Image (cartoon, rainbow, N blue to C red):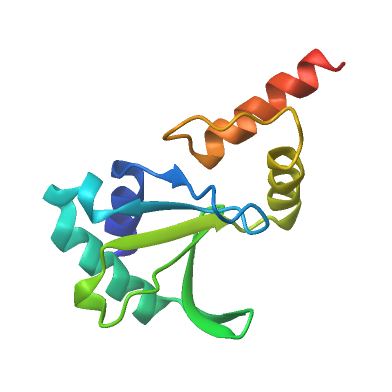
Length: 130
């Protein structure tokens, strides 16, 4: 897989907000939603391993790959069993805005929403409060 193919893959798949981790805002894509892209998911997992860097989160080390304003990782090993890939914003301020918003009374979770959807809601709430 090339970087261009990796960029293409992440644009093709559905990403959904992981609502169970409100203090670590991220989203994920899973094989179930993109079965026709299974081989690309596996290739992307290997691309992360080969081209990424090691990042420590808590007491665990993950291989992470930055593409544009996001970083990507998988927690599945061996990689050929990958069925889920995670991503989040690199920008810590964006992450903090999302953390604060999802913990506020203004936040209403909607099934299938993404981090982009949450940022849009933040903008709408900020517009109303101006």
